[in-house]
Length: 209
Image (cartoon, rainbow, N blue to C red):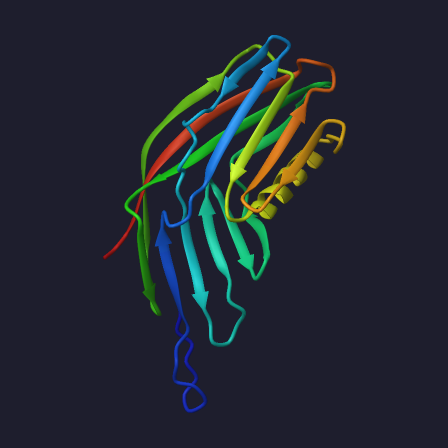
């Protein structure tokens, strides 16, 4: 979490702040077919938690590493990007069908912050996992909204994932962002041709006192 002092020139060490569940991250998933709404995640994916590391560097640009909902984000100034992809995937099934698989990650633990200039450890332990939605019936529209401090990183990830699945922006999907959220809206090109699967993985998280 720091170190790197230079004798004579500077005896001050860099440091950092490690926090658990300081920042909120929510996800809302909704799916429709010709009959109307068929799935709404409601409160199931709210308060997913986060792990954050914020540096206070003496000899390098300050940056933040944030782990939320299965994604590891790197933040420098106002720029943010996904360094480790979340378990939210979009892929083609055959010529027309589209698969959307979401494995949301919830971090459960007391809110805690710790500053240090040495090695610190974050502990993660498997708690529970379960399927929230999995249906053989196809749907026509899926909307995924992530509420986060870093909506641009999530928007970029959604766009990259959809592009790799050979989906066309403006026709098959759109992405909208504001200061607190990113929304990925997917529309089946041939009607009800999206297969949605949602599960939730819960992990216990803590850092030493």
